[in-house]
Every structure is written in structure tokens, then in C-alpha cells.
Image (cartoon, rainbow, N blue to C red; front, side, top):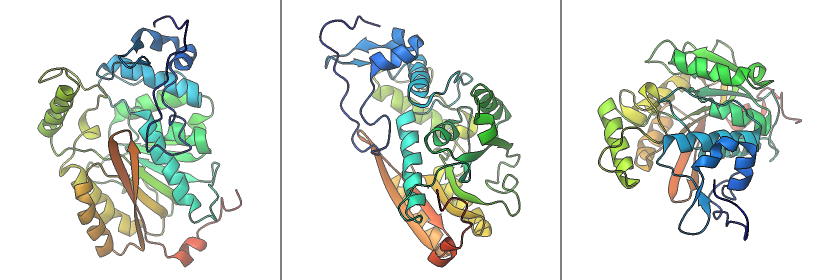
Amino acid sequence: MPALSGRPPRTPPAKPGLHPRNRHAGGYDFPRLVAACPELGPFVARVPHGGLSVDFADPAAVKALNRALLVEAYGIRDWEIPPGYLCPPIPGRADYLHHLADLLASSNGGAIPRGAAVRVLDVGVGANAIYPLIGHREYGWSFVGTDLDGAALASAARILAANPGLAEAVELRRQTDRDRIFAGVMKPGERFDLTLCNPPFHGSPQEAREAAQQKWRKLGRGAAGPVRNFGGQGAELWCEGGEAGFIRRMIAESAALHGQVRWFTTLVSSSASLPSIHRSLRQIGAADIRTVPMAQGQKQSRFVAWTFLTPEQQAAWPARWRDV
């Protein structure tokens, strides 16, 4: 890392659109991050505007930045994922969780419920376990994380075991049926305040490769990069029917679980999918449907939330956290 003497380097401007509670809304404080995680130092360099940054086209730099962010902001240590697995952009993942906290607060008199009594199901927890890590550190929530990939679950378990208290707060479950989302991992009578999901975007491995190549070109690295800077493989990137097909299956399964989940939610990468998603939700009788916009810089995102509970039924929902 370059010397930091003389005039303090300019911190990148705030990322427009990030949630006000997002710890990363003020940009990356690279000197502070390097102090917390020295292995980030070799990847940090000055950029033309005079500040400091890393090469976001370099997978090693992205992973080192994630480690530093997790240590400095959340006290998460020994975060490691196997080569090729999804390395998530942490500010955006944190944003989803903060907006979910607001969703729960909207039916709790405006107060965000905190503590282990709030139960969250993470569909596709992945090798990185990013949502349980941040969600527990920020709000104390307890999580169940599910995944098809045994190696991903083993990686998530190693991260949890390396950080005191996390293994007790996060349970990992293997989904053995590729055609099911909730069935087989949600137990009869089990209740969750939230479900969350970052669904696979693509409909085939070829589609995923083409998207990776297009992203690589935008990063100025030629027609075909050897790797994705944020990684990802298998079920992390693609499934039959792509994102829209996955969400349709999720919606169909959710109807049978209407009394077990307060709010179902999922990220939606393509705004073009929203009309069909809303139509499907109306057809199965969702009582409340919400689309919550999110943004990070120029990137626009959103998640859709739905519940089958009427306001009266929500008021009668088990009040484990109502006095929190």
C-alpha cells in the first residue's frame, strides 16, 4: 500500500442510495480497513481522482476487501471461501438486511425487532454465509441457512465455527431436492419471521458464462476473462428457468406455508420480471405485496416481499419480539 503521509487521501464519496444504517454508506476508508486487515494493503493503490481503491476486476483484491470489511465493520474473522465460489458485494448484501429490518418494524410500531427470537430463513446461504453473518451482528437475529451444495455448507460451517457465538445463532441445513426450495428444509409447524433469497440469475451454464464475459469486457479486460471477479458456480449462478423460474417456484411453494412465515422475500435482479411476479402473487392470494427499491451507486436493485397474513393475523402472530 502507498505511504499515507502528507495530505489525507480523499475517501470515495458516499454511495448514493445505500440504506442510512448501512455501515458502508460513507465509502471505503482504506487506511482504516488496512489497519484492521493488513493483507488488504498490497491491493490498495491510488487512482486518478486522487483517492485510494482496489482493482475490482481482480478476484483476489475483491476477496481481500471483503475480509477487511467483515473484520472492521462486523468483527468477523477468518472469513474464507473455496476458490470459485461467490464472493458477495458486502454493501449491497447489508442493504437487503437493513431494509428487511424496516419491513419487520413496519408491523411492530416502527421499532426494529432485535435478538435471537427473530428467526430468518436464508435460502441459498452459500459458502460465504454473508446474510447470517451480517444479520446476526447487526440485529442479533437467529438464522437457518439452506443450500444444495454440501461443500458450500461445509465452508459456511467453518466460518461460523471460527467466530464465537455464530454457530449457536446459525443452523445449516442441506436441501437434497433440486426442484424444491422450502420443502424438506422447513420443518412442519416451524415459524420464521422472514425468508430471504438471492436467487440464481441465469437459466443455463452458457448464459452464465456469456454474462461473465460481458462483465469482463465492461471492466476493460478483453473479450473473455478467465474468472469472474465475484466468482460463483453451479446453483449460485444458474437454475432451470433462471431467476424468474426460481421465483415462480418459490411463490408456488410459499402458498402452502402461509401460516409459518410472516414475510417471504427475494431479490429480483431484473425489473422486467416484476409484473409477472406480482401477477403470480395475486393469483395465489398474497394479502400484501411490496417491492422495495435499493441502489448502490449506478446499480439499481430491489426485492419483493409478500405475506399471506391479514393485518389482524399479523397482530396475532407469536409476539416473541414485540416488546424488544
